[in-house]
Length: 256
Image 1 (cartoon, one colour):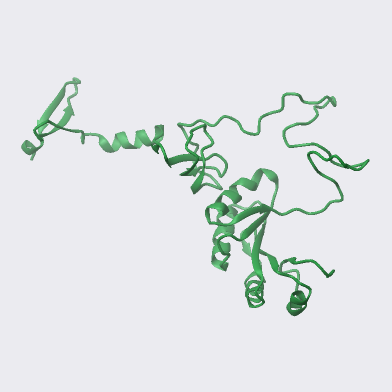
Image 2 (cartoon, rainbow, N blue to C red):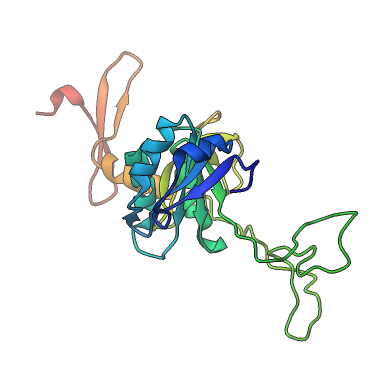
């Protein structure tokens, strides 16, 4: 290893690590593969113990394999291995699958990052000293060219409107935690939930508790035949309705 590096990336593919030499070379932190798919890296626990013994900072990463239950496994596995709050957890996956993982990891108290590899290209948004040639320049994930080669001037939005009253059914990546509402509600960072790891619905905010249509439906079923009113002198009446739609009030004390 060249002198000067202070971080190394490790997985079970490394079998003959000289930990004393890493310390001598100035390594201060390790990024350890904790899992891939729904499988724990065979050396993760051993590497973590060795790194702790040498006083190194410990971070983790997960290799994506598109397997059901992968988000949950990556979270629970890292917790089992003892990844500490404030550590970094990196993900090696296609861009479309990042948020389901990272939102869950952020809720666990870790910093989230994306694992990248050098493929001999340059990438930047703006640079006054760009080289004469580069494979990638000033491109992002919403602008592009159509089939004729013309620039798409009205790209598809990366942030489509989310229905604020009817959350989708939960699926892979769903979580409960803190986030910023993605439906347009104000209130900043709030306690809420996501049904897909991307769209976040605030529930407890500085403005109070947010109720949505599906919440109202559930509450209305619970309130059937349980509506009560209290008079100014404290008498409690139970409300009911007959098949003709006539509303009736009866003293609670008269109901046996």
